[in-house]
Amino acid sequence: MKTLKLTLFLAGALLAAVPLAYSANSPQADGAAAASKTHVLSREEFDKLLAQPGKVLVVDVRRPDEVSDIGGVPVYLSVQVGELEKNLAWIPRDRVIVTLSNHAKRAIKAADLLTAQGFKVAGAAGAQTYEQQGGKLTRVAKPATPASGAAAAH
Image 1 (tube, one colour):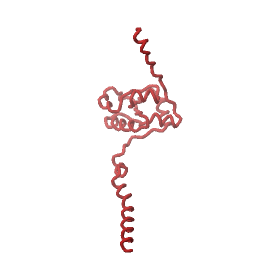
Image 2 (cartoon, rainbow, N blue to C red; image 1 turned 30 degrees about the horizontal axis):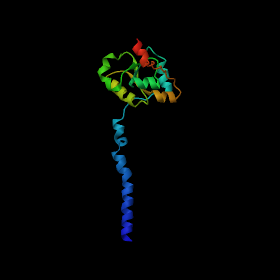
Image 3 (cartoon, rainbow, N blue to C red; image 1 turned 90 degrees about the vertical axis):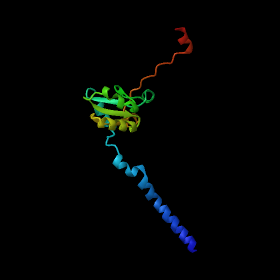
Image 4 (cartoon, rainbow, N blue to C red; image 1 turned 120 degrees about the vertical axis):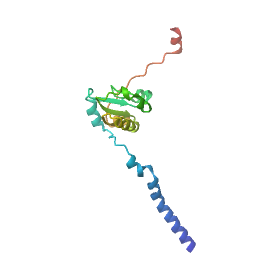
């Protein structure tokens, strides 16, 4: 009986310690220190910025296929997040910048980079999140793929 009680006690102690050990070592526990300071824009905030096309630049960091499949905003600069640092010279410094990705994760990364480089960044937005909140995305039809016979005729 003593062995059973000791086993149950140890098992209970181990189970109680697991959540504490997990939370102490989890990325969320130390994520506060490493967390981004970039603001994720609501649909309303993004719409207000889009209404000022002469003052705002949207830097869309998605792949071209994501932009064509999901949609985007009418005017933007397309630079994939992995290429952003190499293309900083092309980004105007006289505009407020909004970075855009599908759900703002890559956009936050891009916004952090741009902020660190001295750009004025209003925040990050997610195209799919924006649309789910009632925002309107612009969709551009993909060009038709020429039929193999039509291509040979030209």
